[in-house]
Amino acid sequence: MEKFYERKDINKSTIEIKITIPKDSFKKSYEALLEEELKKADIKGFRKGKVPANLVEPEISETVKIKTFEKLVPLYVTTALQKEDLSPIAPPVYKNFPDFSKDEDLVFSMDITIMPEFKLGNLKKIKVENAEAKISEKEVNEALESVLKNNNDTKAKEINDAWAKEIVEKLGIKDVKDLKGLKEYVKDTLKKQKEHILLHKREDDAFEQAIKISEIEVPESAIKYEAEERERAFAHDMSHKGIKVEDFLKANNITIEKMRELWLKDAKQALESDVFLKLYAKEKGLKLTDKELEEKIEEIKKNAPKDTDPKIFENEEWKEYIRKINEKEDAFKTFVKEVLGE
Image (cartoon, rainbow, N blue to C red; front, side, top):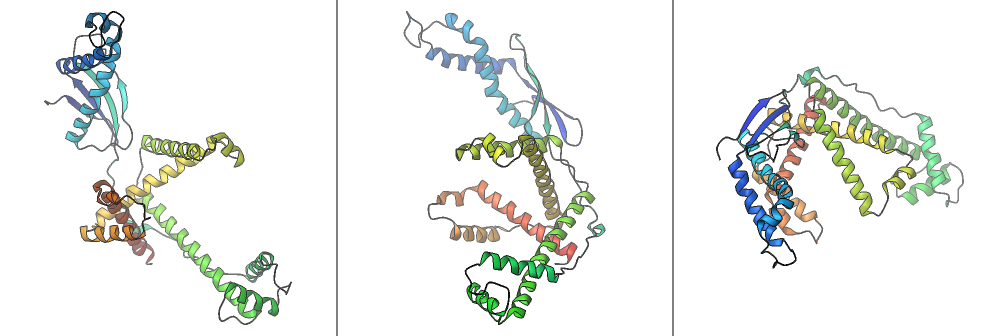
């Protein structure tokens, strides 16, 4: 196939591809498809499939031409993208369609959205507040009140040593003998929970700064497409569960507009995170070896449901997906250790 397309870079994320389908190639495909359609033709007075072309073609010509075009487009588009080494991150936007009534080459254009190239920013500029996890006496007392409320089958009905002994025995808390010990246990538990929350907050803050410092801006068309995919998945899930979308929205006191706003926000964050982690992994040379990948797959096999189709574990696309997931996880852990020292 000779070069049949022209490339024009509109900006760093948009490329226009102008494709020409030679009229002879189109005619050949059209005639082949027309022949198939004629075999299906059923007109009174003729045996099925034996209807003269001149009787049927005028009626179905336009439809067959459109079908021919739809059949050829993916081949030409895919070939052009492969030759240019382009990986679209959103469906192409077709800018014009050819005129089938003219006896000439078919020419059409489309805009392809790709992910721009980014450079890792200076991560030393990241500043994250290291807040201390402090637990007040009020928080401890509120936690104990909650335990009392949710365990109303104890003999003791107020918070004291007797009640504390019952609770620690009931909940299986070891090395606690009285109310003082229970308060210390609760305080320690609350502190660990708060430390966990603060750590995640610091990680999120650092990650957000890293994306900003690296000036990662995902094309709006990609964000919109990802958000629409989330909406389609949501609608499919609701349908599968036999729930009407309107009923779900009403029950949760939320509008579809608000849901779309949330999907857009989620899509933006997900895409930005994905771009940064891939960039970080590449910069740091983080790559899962084939041996490590096989070990991960074996681990997944052990924990997979018994009715899992074993063929999935041999699927190359699935393996590559597992590789990418683990590389991004490693990138995030390495990033956190580098920036937060944890």
